[in-house]
Image (tube, rainbow, N blue to C red; front, top):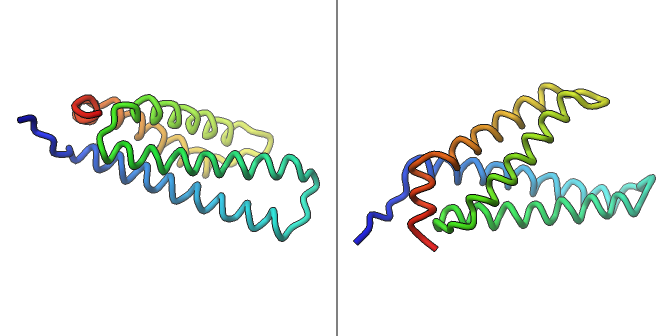
Length: 130
């Protein structure tokens, strides 16, 4: 019988994804409240952004649960999300209104997520199940 215990690195990855999920859910709630209470300059854009962030929140919840359960499909999903987050962090540092204080935190969590998901214990854990 195989050893199916979670490595501490898997737990750290789940905690990181959980924190990212909580943040995105918070942003989602904020955007929904703003959409309902404030008058948007461009309503279709505001609605599209809100729907997109809702979908990202759902995606992150599914990824976090999938990593916790050891599903192999989550490796690619986590990689894609972390690379997208890395691009957002770089854009935050170099954008029209640069926010390096936010950008470096986004980049740091993305790099940590990439390192964790590519580590041997996490890869072995995700390979062992599905």
